[in-house]
Image (cartoon, rainbow, N blue to C red; front, side):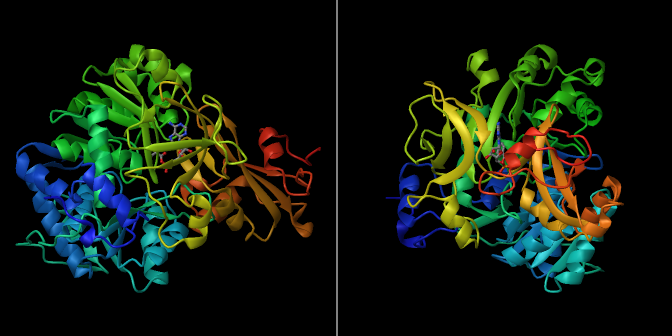
Length: 557
Ligand code: OOB
């Protein structure tokens, strides 16, 4: 047999899969032994003169991307990064992001994918939980983002801080490692090779616990999902993919995403911001053929006067997911934007569902797609843990060749998030049609989905409770037409603060100052004298959600 045997496998892989399962996925030919480094290498050697990535400041061919990766690797080496080193990456959508990630893979290092919106509180937590050797962030940009690097410097002295300016022509020649520049002339690509069964990177969980969990993905499992996504989404070498959502998110990385584009040697256009003005002109300028969006962004595009001003005829496919898309909006995509919609229901833990390009319109607009792999296993369970009757709603559990079976260093969370036989309990309530298509009907987890951004209410509550004027707090998602949900914090003031509670602006400033992620800061603050209760005396978040945008003043029931 030419395939690798189980001998090079640990008993349990970093993603929680037993060696036995890994061997099975290899035998099926799903796991091919490819690493992320191999993916970059073959793209660079296969199409050196093709444009790999364009952002507002730079345009790199694949050959130049390789050269940039070598320089970036020299910078990271100077920061003490080597094989197996976790590195927290917090960069805006840019060519520098791609050079960073490629360099880290070439060094055999392990990126930890933070988003620019993450606050210092979260980033410090990622550094600690991942045992990070280095943090890389922008050298210029919004104040809140620059404050993160300062916080890491101050509180995590063991973490090297790399800063890079994505707006200059030679970002790596000017990058700083703990304040110093590194000589990157004559930098050569590292020669490190890692096992395809090893930890490739850590993604962040959407958040149901106070602080986000880390999601361990291996080369084998993740690249299978990338190759399969490329097939299901028909990504071609001549494609030009627009990255409008934050580049490090799982959706943008792999569904089919940046890595899907690299896999076929396509061109990636990094949008600095997701606004219709920026993105619609980028589509016309670069002949963009594909893009991924969350539902509120799709609405913003659909309703933008800029649609009429730009030639969008190059656009072939829009992938929309991360939160539930209304069928009204879904139906507008074809007629108004002139392209095909694929709904995407995915999760950083693994499972991704797509509507298919040849599905009838009705399925495309009313369902969230079906699993991309025939080897995805799904169970839809009633409250008592038994399977529901076909077509009935229940909680989705899933297992398969690219779904994790454990979080990184989180034994207690693992015990409740995975079944004994390795199924991930998604917390999503779904029903499945006879065609296999899934309709997401609700959620059985304490999480707010603010237009695709996942927020753990507990995280926000913890920070608000630290405010001297706050006696108690309860954070819930309330319905919002554009976002699906927005964040509402119900506050009970402390006795002596009843007369003058801080304003919403003051409370937001307080939360940002404590390093809370920008997308987790409440949209609405409501001061009440008590919370509605359940039969057993717990705060009834269900009732609070129903009290949508209540009047100021005491809650009535
Ligand atoms: C994506 O990943 P995450 O990890 O940020 O969030 C996963 C959760 C799902 O469990 C579900 O609650 C929700 O986001 N979700 C959707 C959805 N897509 C995701 N809910 C309703 N309809 C959809 N289409 O969000 C993600 C990862 C890969 C690809 C696409 C999205």
